[in-house]
Image (tube, rainbow, N blue to C red; front, side, top):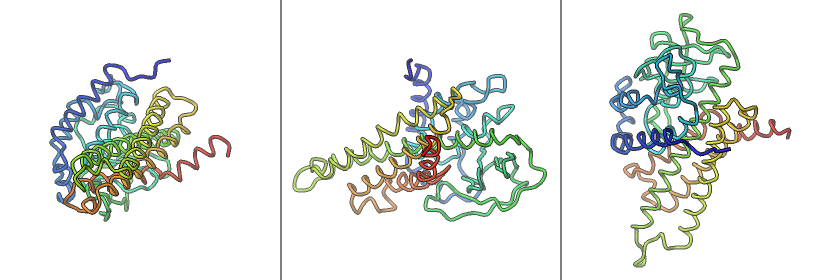
Length: 321
C-alpha cells in the first residue's frame, strides 16, 4: 500500500504555504493580540476561502472540494507553521462536514465539550456541543464572556448561555465524537507545524549568534537540544498523518489513532518550545521577539481538544490497559 501524499495534495499544501509565507508574517499574527472584538482583519481569511481551504471537506454537491482529511492535514500543518490567527481547524475540520452547503468566507468557531471558543467574539457563528447535541448559533443567539489567556491571538471566550432558537445540526452522539476527533487531529497537525517553525527559527538563530568567536550552533549542548527537538517532530509527524488517514478511511482504530496523534504532537511541540527557549537564552523571553508567538500558541493548543494525559488515557483504554 502507498501511503504517500498525491501530487494534488502536495500542490494544495505548497499553495497554502506560499500564501501564508507572503501574507502571514509574525507582524500579522501580532495584530490579532490587540484588535478590538469583532474587528479582526479578515483579508487573509477571505483568500483561504477563495482557495477552497475552508470547504475542503465539504462534498462537491454542496459547493466544496470533496476531498478527505489526508488532503487537509498538510494544509493545517502549514497554518500551524504560520501561527495563523483564525479558527481554521474549527471551520474547515470540525464544522464543514456537518454542513449542507458552503458557508463561503464566514468565520465559524466551535465549543466542544464546554471548551472555550477561539475567536468567539469575532465569529459569524459558533458550533456548540450542548450535551451531545450540536447547535449552530448566530452571535445574537449566544452569550459570550471574554477570557484572559496566555496567547491573546486566540481571542478566547466562554459560552455563558445559548438561545433555544439556535439551529440543530445533529443529535447523533457519534457525529459529536467525530467532530471532536477531527478537531483533535487538526490541532495536532497545527502543533507539528508550530514545532517546525520554532525549530527552524532556533536553527537560524544558532547559526548566526556567536560566542567565543564561533556560532553557538557548534556547541555540543545546543546540538543536543536541536537534535532532540528534531527527533520528536519526526516521530510525531507520521503519527498525525496516520490519524488523518484513519479518519479518511473510517478505520476501526480511528479513535485510538486520533488520541495517539494528539498526545504525541502535544508533547513534541512543547519539547521543541522548551528547547527553542533554552537555545535562544534571555532573548527568547522577550515579548518583542517572535518566538513567543509560536511558543504560546503551542502551549495553548497542547491543551485544546484534550491534553496529552487525556489522550494517553484513551490510548491505554483502547489497547486494554
